[in-house]
Image 1 (cartoon, rainbow, N blue to C red):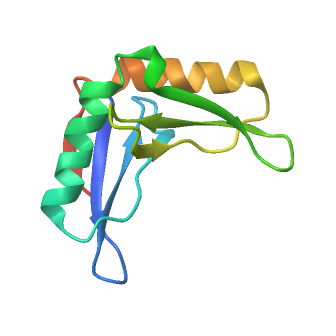
Image 2 (image 1 turned 90 degrees about the vertical axis):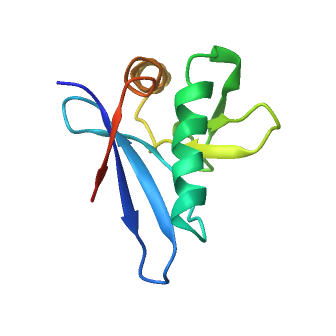
Length: 109
């Protein structure tokens, strides 16, 4: 089963998306955009940038849990992961984004 982007409106009138892997796990969440078109552009940016391993910034939360941020070529954050239990799990999450994002469909959530 292929991954998919779930595009949805937020309670404050904005739009955001989540990238889900084929198994249904959330692997990337966007910021809240002011317009649907901007969120759709964000999805296209994820598809384009996910193939470039250098676009993934590995980080650590204050509690020590690893997570990652996907950045566009201009350095703008376009998505971030959940917190992971280990660095290996985070690396698997990055691989999942790289595998799922380029061909993922977009659906309404």
